[in-house]
Length: 174
Image 1: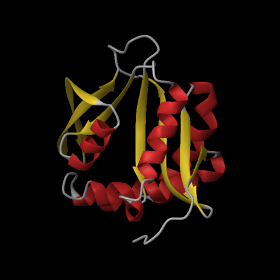
Image 2: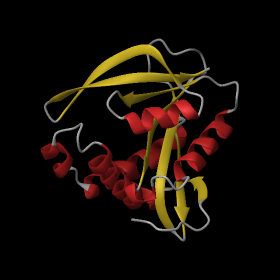
Image 3: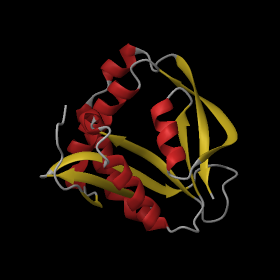
């Protein structure tokens, strides 16, 4: 558990951040989804495999018009957010989508997520429509996104993970 976080810097991620992003990604999933996604699936998440994928994705990012930011303090990655063109079939022209946003569980409640979302929203601009998908059972995330101007638009989908069908809800910011 983090007791105090000094200055948080939000900056564009580089391929050198892949290992730390993977560490945060896995630990966040294991903590946030413990009562939502089957334990066996969460235990099987491998930070080394995720790091390889992140290194590949970060290298491709600019050509795919995908942006990833990391939040760090004292050289340690505390969280990340990735966004790019919306992947939804009904996306409006120019709409962007937040693909992922995860924090080291020890930093929850310290303003790191707020810094990340403000950076992403500032980057895309107030007039750019933006969407994201959130697990229906993830009350903490749903509340966070509502506080930052997103609201459910009535579209839902089922995602199968670890043998469980999980309901996702789309949120939009107009």
